[in-house]
Image 1 (cartoon, rainbow, N blue to C red):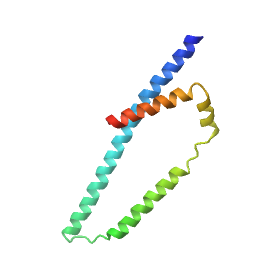
Image 2: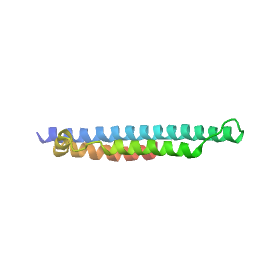
Image 3: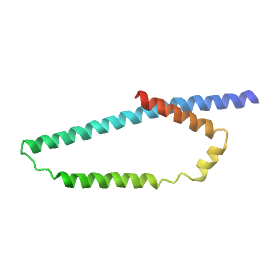
Image 4: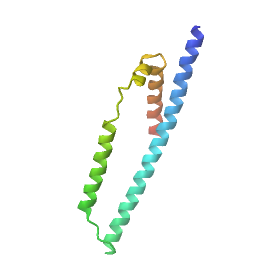
Length: 113
């Protein structure tokens, strides 16, 4: 009985750690790809303006980007983390080792990605 419980916890920790590493690595790759794409797009706009092919209203571009960022921030603030399913998972023996191992794995995966 104790070995079943111990093996379940070890499996949870190991699986969560591995999943966290994969998630962290993937998130960092997506962020890098997005940053490179946006950077190249803005560099292309600056080049077109320098060559006087296009006229860019940088103030309007800044306003639009601020609105997008504010919308994203407000959307993430609205996510309700106090749902009963999350509370029940955190109380069980399954929730705490899983979330802890995922967060450690995510950190390592994000740093190495």
